[in-house]
Image (cartoon, rainbow, N blue to C red; front, side, top):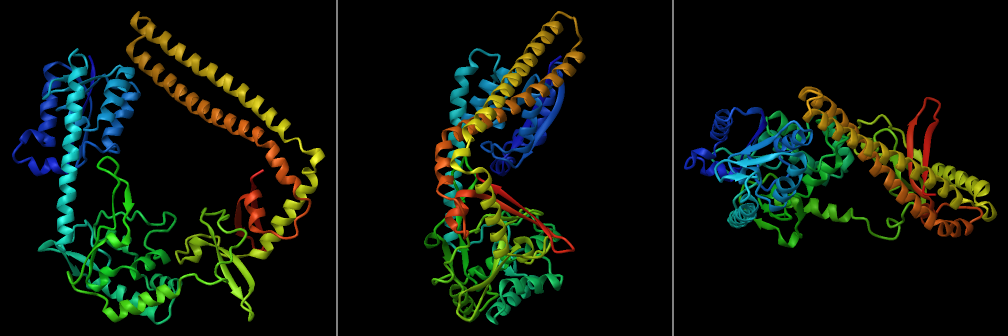
Length: 523
């Protein structure tokens, strides 16, 4: 008895038409496909439902769960209302139905459009159906874009979530009204900033007062909002400097509707692409302002004046972008202190998670940049003295030995992978001959499939290391010439750091002031 995966899908566009087409609903799709299985005495393995997802979307959660079950060998037939429920993407149709399903021994059936991979006529029909389905999605996408562009130009708010400080009007979903609970926080942020407070001071004040961040506020109100710009290391509910910066730069608070700042790359690719500011759609006086024009103007003047200009601010630390916190993985940010002559007197590095005001990293103390530079110089000079005299460099021999070992490892992995495939084939023959039961075969197949996947991953990883090792051998002479340029370093500059240092990790400071410093060299 074949095991059947029932797959149902309904997109937002389909929901708009569901009153006119009852068979399009999820419930009716399920009922139709269940009856289809019961009439044929087929076993339903599982029912997979993606409600509210486009047929062009490759990230559908239930769709991908079904594919994982297919790959594991749990499913014999994939059953849909029609091929468009499965996918409207011609590439996906070809990759899965016409390739992977054949490899996995899976039959695809679309009931309403008579799609059946066991039918000789399906291969021809599939191409026309797939092309039509994709053209349908492309046409719908173009119509939606034109509609949304028109609504933006008419001053209608079309986003799903209101900016912090506002909420969507209960009587008109295209209009914003002030949320007094959070608007007061927005006013406080602007007032503090034009009074001279910096981002960090504002963040510390908001966090100490127990005011939750915009993302957490929406969550507490039951919203499904997800902040794609959020710092994943930030503990829930805390403000950060980047959040404050976005609020101070958001002209929506003046009553001007600002939209069209980004768009999807294409109807197939849902990643967003930023739009040049000159092309944003900005309609003034569409909703009540939280910030008056004078406050906005003063804020923008100060924001522009804080831009990094001048010779002093353009000085680049030799370790810029190369130092990370060993606890949370965030960059270590620089604090610079100047003397009366306006030259750098001292600079320290502190974990960005703590420095920005989130304060949820235990690596709180800063480290002297000059102390760190000296440690790096001492260790680098030690390496040069010990290993890098021209007559002692044996890099090619070291890499050649590594390559030999990696190639031996790859041969063993390929042998194990081939063995697993042969054992799987032998067991399949035993199953057909009745030597082992279906249950035993399924168990053995799962174990061998897992082993085969593990071997494939290790083979790919080993092959990658082999290519890297071969590249190192080719670059040996170049590396030798770099090292031979130096005999001793007196000062760490940007060129030396770029040539030798990949990145540096700074650990927590102990009670006696010591901390671990791990330097990851490029050589």
